[in-house]
Length: 435
Image (tube, rainbow, N blue to C red; front, top):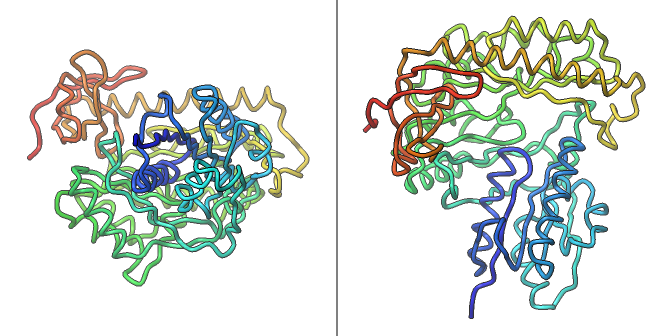
C-alpha cells in the first residue's frame, strides 16, 4: 500500500524551523512520505508563529493554501499560534487538528487516528507551565547546508509586548550530552555548520555547563567546521562568552543581539533588562576584538509612548554601532500582554515613516560593511544555486557571497575572494575548496 504523504511548512524563527525538521522525521518514522509543501499531499502541517499579527495572518494563509491544494487533506496547525489561540485556529473550517507546542511529539499519532477515522478532528493543546523539554531529535536538516540545533526553549521574562512566554512556557535546556550527540549526528550526515537556537540560548544551563562550555565541546566535534550562535540577549553576552566567540576559530564571528530601542525610557517601558549603555558594552565586548564580526539586531518602532526624541535616540545608536544588518518591525499589540492595554499608540503613518528611515540606515550600513571586505578572502559554506552557473553561501561573519560555481559545491566550504558589493548582492571569485 502506498504510504500517505505529508507536506510541512514553517512560519517564523529558527527554533520553529528546527522543530519542523523534527516533525518531518516523526512523520517518516510513522510511515508517511515527506513531500514538498507545494505538492498535493494527504496531510499538511503548518508550524505557526504568533510573534506579531502579521505572523498570525501568514500562518492562517498557509493553512488555507494547504486546504486549497488538496481539499480532502488533513490540515494540521501546530506551533506558537496554535498553543496561544487554539480556539481561533480550531474555528477555521480548513483545519482538522490543532496541536500546541506541548503536543508536537504526538502529531503523527493524532493524524493517524484522524486518517483511520478512529478520532474526529480535534484540538490537542496542553499547558506549557509544566512542559518538559522536547528535543524533537533530527537525523538531518533537509534541503539545507547549515543545520539548526535546538538547545533551549521557553522564557521566564515578561517583556511588555511579547507573547512568547505564553506560547513557549518556562525556560528549560536540553541536556549537554544530547546536544553534542545531535551535533555529531548532523556532522556525520554532512552538515559542516550548526546554528544553536532556542528562545534564550544565553540562558542555556545543564549539569555539563552553560553556553560557553557547550561551545567549547561543539567545536571539537569531528567533521563540524563552524558553530554559529542564534539570537543572544545583551545580558547573556557575558565576558566568558565574548572571549569564547572571539578566540575559538570554529565559532562563527557573528552576533545577533536584539536592541528593540535605543531609548532608556522605552526600554524600561518595554520591560527590557538592560540600558542603552549596557547594550553598547555587550556588543563592543566582541566587535572591538573582532573587527569584521557580523552584527545584527531586531529594532522595534512605535512602541506605545515612543516619542520623536525616543526614536532619534534609537536612530543615533544604530548609526553609531557597527551593525551589518537590521531587522526592523513595527509594534504589534498581542492580546494578553501588558503593552496591548497601553495608551499613547503611535499612528500607523508615523510607524511606517520610522521603519523606512531605520531600514534605509540598515541598508547603508550593510553596503558599507560589505564594501569594506572587498579584496579579502572569506570561507563560504555553499548553500546552493543562485542562477545559471552561480552559487551562493554564507561566510562566518554572515555575509552572503555569490560566485561562479556548480550545484555540486553545496554543503562544502570554499575560499572566496570578495570582488564587489552592490545594494543587494556581494560578489566574489572562488579560490579553492577548503579541505
